[in-house]
Amino acid sequence: MTIETHFPLKKYNTFGIEAFAQKFVEVQTLEELQTVLHQHVNEPKFILGGGSNMLLTRNIEALVIHVNLKGKKVIKEDDDHVWVEAMAGENWHEFVLWTLEHNYGGLENMSLIPGNVGTTPVQNIGAYGAEIKDTFVSCETITIDGQSKRTFDREACQFGYRESVFKQEAKGIYIITSVVFRLTKRNHSINSNYGDIQAELAKNNVVTPTIKDISNAVITIRQRKLPDPKELGNSGSFFKNPVIPRTHFETVQAQYPDIKYYDVSPTEVKVPAGWLIEQAGLKGYREGDAGVHKNQALVLVNYGNATGQDILKLSQKVQQTVWAKYGIAIEAEVNII
Image 1 (tube, rainbow, N blue to C red):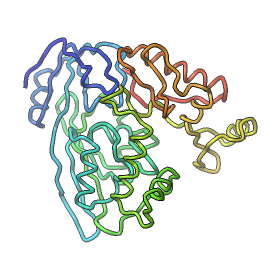
Image 2: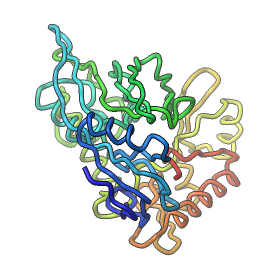
Image 3: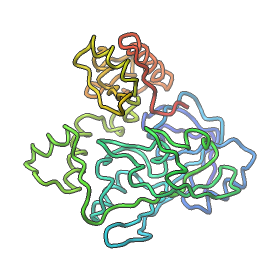
Image 4: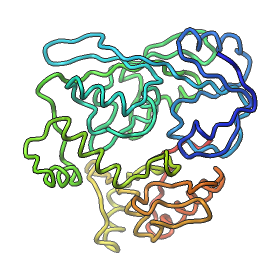
């Protein structure tokens, strides 16, 4: 466990942004994490996971702690369910595949989402009708000052749409070290309601899908629509899908009858941000090496040498263009650093 200075972070963020950490250390055990926290208690710290949900717009003038805790195990089970604990540094997609190998259901719709297990509760990640909160039991944390541990159950996490307590009042206070999920062993709940999934299953003549079939369909869809961060820098979906009052939606729909939407409640409607961006003419738009992806307008990409400021400037242009056309505000899902 070595602390390095002026450490390059390009390989530690999926946008591939060139930025530097004033100091950097990787911890692979809880004991190493506690030691670092205690030894540097008075220094500013930046906690780094998989680097998949952030945009670096500057160098990090702090001690960057890369949490790379590994391990996964069954901690409890009954006839129908299994409780699995995964450490924060486990790659999310590899963990999902591991659950499927054991025929544990519940995470299959979130296959191929980039990042590590430890950051999944922060965003309450989700895809194709599933969210972390659906299977989440609890997470273990340690305070950044290293003085205490705390277990957060689902209620304490205050999950919302791409939202949790860790993005609000608990932000900058806790480091998630492990997460427990409750998954099914049998009688799996198959979530195939999304049209893309249904189309993919039909293409493969799958009439009664298994959880593995759902995962395979999601992987195929994501690979077709979303760029691989290893080949083209990106952070997945850059924007949240806006939830707007139904009254405002009906006003917009009167002008744009083809607008896509999902009912959220009697008074609210969710509109796909990707559709808004595409219809605003920005799909495939590019400014230098910063661009809107040609296959999925929800994704901003780094074609090679874009800076974080370049990506940020492009994201603001997207927001302003959508607002000017629809009067709908779209928020960044990615954390702007």
